[in-house]
Length: 181
Image 1 (cartoon, rainbow, N blue to C red):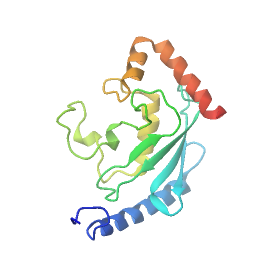
Image 2: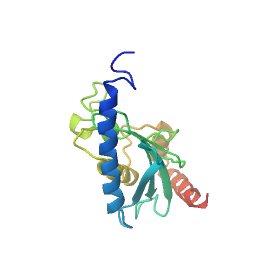
Image 3: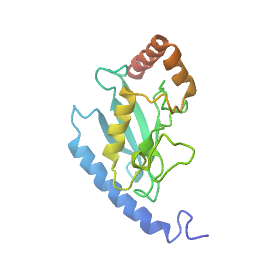
């Protein structure tokens, strides 16, 4: 087993640091939760601080207003050096959410630059100084203001660009479905 593999002696201390940091962030976010923040957080399994369940309320004055959207946030063992991954469990129709629910926004991309994406600067990508709250606020902002220039869901982006009224109708249908079950 190489020392970089999960479970190796080198990974265990980093995972411990990550777990303690995530515990602290979770407690802080849970204490700060109120009606106006637009999301709530908790653990998917009480014994696993690396997998969080996030419930977003659709942002006011957006097509998602009135909806309840559930996502899973999975943190790597080397958090905060690398960002978590987020996947919506609720069906979404959004240019920056892959059809399988994975969220594609700069803050969830690994630190550094991407030579294949000159639209995204290193400052927009994940940095260890950022916290979970920053991610959640970025996702709320993404729901209000999709980036069609760098889409994860090409079909949703094309739909939004070419048939905005049709796109809005589909988003509103899914928003209703999110609360109807």
